[in-house]
Length: 226
Length: 221
Image (cartoon, rainbow over all chains, first blue to last red):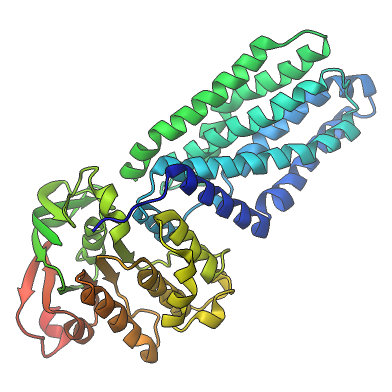
């Protein structure tokens, strides 16, 4: 009476592939949320005026604030929400909840990385920051994307089925993601001073790692309690 | 296939099923009738192992309800509920292939499954552009594809036109022919009696066996 299920990693890959296909069709993150992120980046230069030195100083920090706030919306986007019927079918395939949520978080990481990459030239054009520490972005962008994706997916699973989930989800993620914001900002800034910012790199790796561990270890309990 | 005794289930804090007994063997089809809010859909969710009972004992396909054993048998159970299980942004074929990939079934069988329910030509249409009847037929195609040992149907005729009613019978017969079992929940008493070997009415959270088809709906309401 039992059916041999595929390996969880294969199932997670299938989930991630489908999630990315859905996002490509819906364009919710890239065509709806990203333009608003760009507009948010535009607000500070409008408020500060043509004060180039000040804008240059604010640029990196503003970029990560926008990535965090709008990244939460990307991570909790509507197209990554299962209807009760669809969720029941996914559960009935017998796949572990960790594979389902892990696959979803992996897809969100890719979408967030694209979101970050699209916003970057907008920030450079508007704020003209000092680009000395920018090689460290190669570490900051994927780590922040992965961390935010894990925390967002975890929050989405926590508030699934609750009234007011659209409000509650971002409220849960924002405080948890603050260390990511701090780590990413300081990583690039300190890197610009010619120092190796190990401490901030460690902070990013730790928060991202904890987010993924919590997601994968807590997935089954979250699913069975829903 | 199904053996539960003294089953109690709460939805939130509300007790919905109380001291419910049910046994369904291989090759059998059990029909469940009952008024709105009687707990018919909840019963199916418990039998699908998606909802944990708070009281009683039971096994579904040999797995004890409320334990981790149920994960192993889930791929052998198909639940067709009220809501469509299809993702609106995916085509009918993509939806079925996704289920096949996740549950270890052969994706090459998807076109044939769609053919059985008459949706082969609509395979490339996104679910969001399909009618309610087409979505219901695609859900039935999932049953054809996954060949479950236990089929749970919640108002299976809802959304189908009369010419498609036979598809429900066909799918149920396919499961039965393979030695599987089915539980069918519906308001439409004559349809349930036509499909099922035995029929029970859900009253006050428990199942009462019916021995004959009521002459009028008012008899069981």
